[in-house]
Amino acid sequence: MADQTEELVDVDLYDDGSFPDFGRNQAPGAVAVFAAVRGKGPVPQTGLATRRQLRAMYLSPGGHEPVGRLVLRSGRWAWLYRIDLAVPKRTPTLAQERALDRAMAARSTCPKCQRRYHYCLPLRTQGCCDECATGTPADPSSYIAPPAPHQLAA
Ligand SMILES: [Zn+2]
Image (cartoon, rainbow, N blue to C red; front, side, top):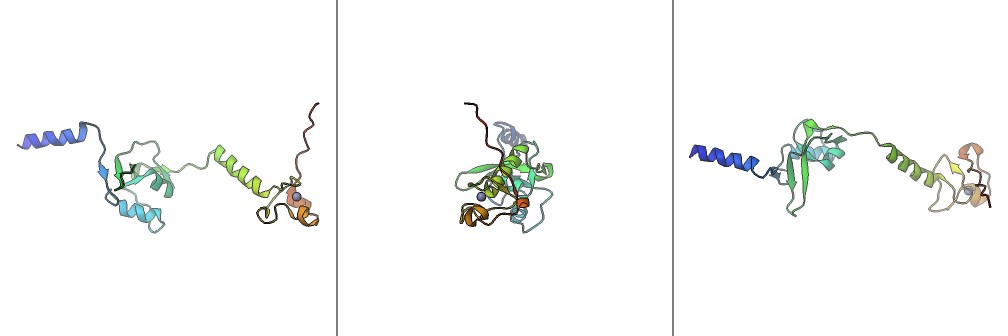
């Protein structure tokens, strides 16, 4: 009988290669993870967390495989990763920085005169820079002149 039980355990673990499922707050360290994600507690050293939870704690799986699943009552689920194997999140990639820079450029460039200012313009209310709106010359040190118009060969 004891042998049979052991066999069943083996089958459970290795037969279909499935991962252990945990409900909400059932995974090891889930409560501490939840608090840390909300900024209401320290980042736990051990336990399991989803990729999204890791990101909220400035961590990433760092290439290690998930060890379980978090299954919600709705049927949705997410992989769970070991916090002790997680690594600090990478700094933004070049592409992300470029996208950020483009967003900033859009907020600080006047659509009328194309100058790029060193601060954000009231585009939502005024729609352009102060000089275009009121005629008051802007401090030349507060903007970068627009690039010369392209000379297109006819
Ligand atoms: Zn302008």
